[in-house]
Length: 257
Image 1: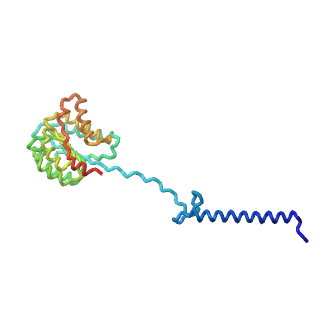
Image 2 (image 1 turned 60 degrees about the horizontal axis):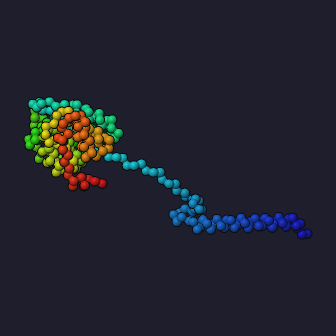
């Protein structure tokens, strides 16, 4: 007995649907083969079908290197007193309020003797060395002896010591007539600040505080030096010409990344 026409039409329709489905599956299979990534992943269009690799999260920037400042001071009892405590306090307060304060570590050593000087360098490995005290020109910087009286250290001895510490980028000699020592130390250090004459307490403090204010704001040493000299002028002090910045261009170039 033959099938009714409507049943025959249904069978034909189902067969046609099966054919269409098979064609779609074949087409999808072809696309997967054609777009195989070559790394173990199968993709259709721009979507991974297997082993999807999510993009890695951006890496945080590498931390900025810390800058350690070794602040040395000496006040021999047989010389005129200086306002060293005020200078140290104002430098510290300036760094604490600076926008890059987390980059700086301030280490203070007082009543420094020759032995204390070398030990502090060895223990701290600073990037900046700051000396506050008396200078004697050709005689050297005035440190203290075991009794608290003056004991000078020569420019040659300082240079020999600084040659051993490649970590040091800058030395500041905030002392009268210290240009002599600065000229010698420049052989071993990229940046050295000295004084070409006697400098008063107030001008010395204004210079030092402004110098570290600028470094704390992210500026480099030459800018900080100019900024500190400008601070002396702003304080209406006629001594802005006394600080000098000496540079060793070979060492500066060698330290550039």
